[in-house]
Image: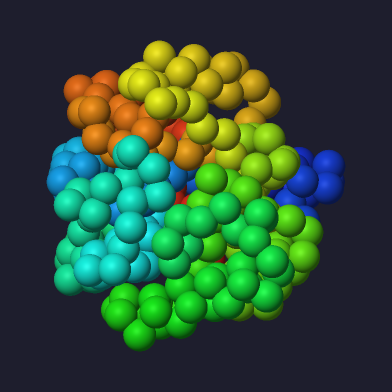
Length: 258
């Protein structure tokens, strides 16, 4: 670590900002972390997103419905359609390419509205399926991304006995810098139409702030999924962000556990 980074780190530590925070982000001069958290498991969109991220040297953050590829999967709404879903051969392909694939429920239910025993059984079934089917998946280094970002305190407590972190509503979308311990990550989303302008405004406001970790819940590309982005906008945004020395665009699990 050079003298400038050492002094920066020492200053942050003296302010109490280093407690539990991976040193790597401060050592690299990163004060603003950004995660675009892509949900559901749209095969076409996810591979297109992976290509865009790779074109600027980044890894994407994908969250998939565990049963989305199975014959019994039923569409939970007008956006998550069986014919659009990828399978675990696809997800293992993306993992091999360096991208992050995390659990996004067994069948995209409103878990907070179900009896607790039923909801926890669905959470466990999802995580167990990932252990069986996703190469290298380690629950304690995983983020469980709640469907609809809807949860309860009891479900949070149960889920954190299985995984290292979870993503849900409740804490806003600007989080503290990541710590290597169980976390409840806040996020925000928008839809059902194209969300290019919304993401642009959110990122602009965040970059004008003192920093932290912004997590935006996104979905498919180019008309696919609820609250979709356009490919051209995503590529332009990422090209801009990677040029900013104080910004890191990272998947949530990699931010927490690597």
